[in-house]
Length: 204
Length: 85
Image (cartoon, rainbow over all chains, first blue to last red; front, side):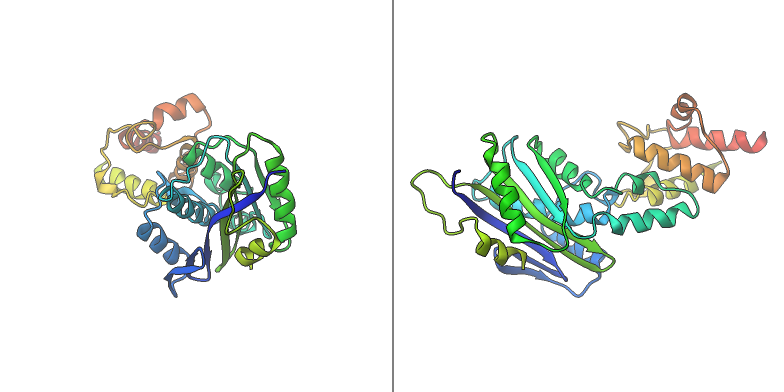
């Protein structure tokens, strides 16, 4: 098994945008206004961002900000990039909205988001990714589970990059962390090897 | 008819959450799908729901829906003809 490293991370949590430990934006605005601010300030591009549900918007924006930052460091995604996301509430935030829409007439566009893994498709389509993608539901961000799953993904030798994350939203409570993992080149040393301690730092 | 088209444009923008689209900028005869507004199949279903909720019109035939939803003008014409029936 090759050694793996974390190349960077981005977090959107409680009105803050944090990248690699540095808070780049802080706001008291509610989620929708905060995310609007994030999208504008960090040039998050999507042909129909408003069409996504809130969970997909959160994960997509956080991922795009990370990818754009890493591109500037010449770390580019390949077609074989894999995705691994988790959260606690699955698509409950949208399920509740869809349930409300049923009272009058079911909304088709809400219905398509009543699965959490749709956010993976949004990220894949935008970036042309065709690697394995996984969405798991867990009670809380569990570094051991991430480590186990990431190591499993990299056992497939076609995977050179994995984008992993925690994307949780329910009402005004949201917490998203996205990070990128790749293999450490032979003979090279990494300042952020993938281990429980580095995962804890990102996910806590 | 003009008022109906104006209302339809506003309702479509609101219902489909087209944040960057000004309803007034939508051409009456511009295609709604593919080119033009670039709507997709889920948007089509949302418009079907909108027509049922706002105008009491039920569209059940997919081929018929394709013709009705070509443009704002074709939707308005269908609503008008439905009213007179």
